[in-house]
Amino acid sequence: MGLSEGLSNPEKKASVVDDIGNMIEAQIASKSGISGIALKTAFAAIKGVKPGYISYVVEQILPQSFTAIDPIWSEGVQTGDPVGYLVTNRSRTANALLSVTDERIKKTQRQIVKGTYDKLRNSAQQHVEAAVPDLAKIIGKYTNT
Image (cartoon, rainbow, N blue to C red; front, side, top):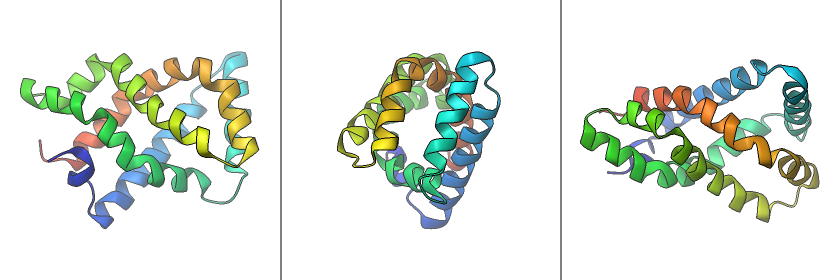
């Protein structure tokens, strides 16, 4: 069973979405310097699209995101530590996750979202890689491995 199927229970999914939303908020808040200011400003603009927009997007891309990282997770299950394996392979994990958002952004009609994403895409890899350990812990929390 893949990650998407394993986390498809509506109650579990709601908790996963909440935890990932909180993780994103914490990751953004932890950024500093000029790039941190730019990221925080962009995040505020995206959050301003409509109330609950971040949770909505997380919920929408969760199945595709889990499908994208499922091969890496499965390799980790074989090693006996899928959470650690995602962390060890954070670059690969980040690439898989970003492939989902790249595809999704191509289809968006919201210009503020598309423009913001396009401006930040070059630095996204490092930010997503930095978030992989926390994401891996969240996934581990809701799976039975």
